Length: 245
Image (cartoon, rainbow, N blue to C red; front, side):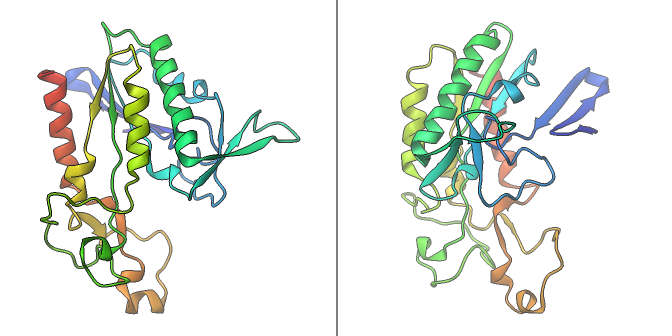
């Protein structure tokens, strides 16, 4: 496996195939594009900049897009009108939904211009939910995914961390697309899996404080997922859509 800045490539030599992961959390250029150092509190996305990353996605056989969590910084997103190199920067604020709509339209325009549907299958994966508020499923106030060992059994459950308004943007924009993009809806099935997160069982990038060690709830990761686990089901869905469309 090799890594070049934002691009990580796994090569299966016996099959003459590669699986590539490209870090671009907003798809458009942003101040969070560094694949290692990207914990930026004040996130800014540059309008109309998808070509900055898109040049690395050309000439592939299968392309899977996903972008959601990094947009959830509040009710507004900061959008850069010019370039990050400009001495004086013009930044406007849009609602998260409008900013997300802007990115989805940019992605679809880029796909239509650069992808050949006879050669490349294009997929878009819906939002990956988190489980940071146990009150969502009737748990105690202040709790999260820590020590959860069973699935949520309410078939109508929808966590507060998943914005329906963003899902509606996806549906609205994709319904107007003339390029065939396969939508992988992993959100509802993943919503039930409060038990599948890494919780406290993960590499800690910073040493834990004594206070954190006394209160595992405070550092439980309820965003990322264990492997093997739920993400294998996502791959099964991708496989099914890929070979049995």
